[in-house]
Amino acid sequence: MNLVETSLPGILVIEPKVFDDERGFFMETWNARRYEEAGLPDRFIQDNLSYSARGVLRGLHFQNPRAQGKLVSVLRGEVFDVAVDIRVGSPTFGEWTGVTLSAENKRQFYVPEDFAHGFVVTSEKALFFYKCTDYYAPSAEGIVLWNDPDIGIEWPIDAPILSERDRTAPPLQKMSEDNLPRYPAD
Image (spheres, rainbow, N blue to C red):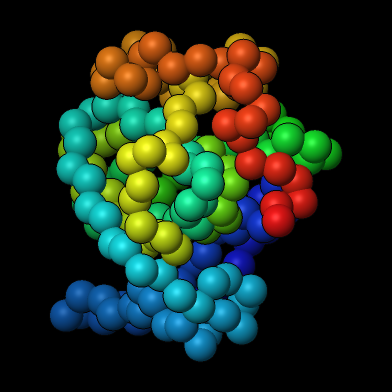
């Protein structure tokens, strides 16, 4: 497996070793020992699967407290996946990084706890899979506006399909610091 560091510390693109032949391919999508040796959590406790059509944008979501680290991948189709540093006091507060994930490139994206996360579907349909380090806690969920001009994410789509919650979320600068994680996280 190959690890690619991004512009934000702790956020990684993972390129698993893929064994291709005339029958198809084989790859490990998770190996606790190997991923722990690479500096990733060795314990994920919830798996999620999302199916969406072209143009659907989900995010930017986070939980505080009960933060979730996420190991994400695409089983069918393609998405543009984004992580945003929302940790109060972080030297990279409000900065983002993104990567294209697809069934074809088989990449994974690791988003540590205390970062906001979102993605937009760039193919006809996408089957999006992710492992989480904590359980979903609706009372701890927060959302940052997907097109917050201060963050300036360069989404590859102009008019996404959004849920009402995602469409009406506040920009990061208007969120109470009490609702955001701290840097360094305690």
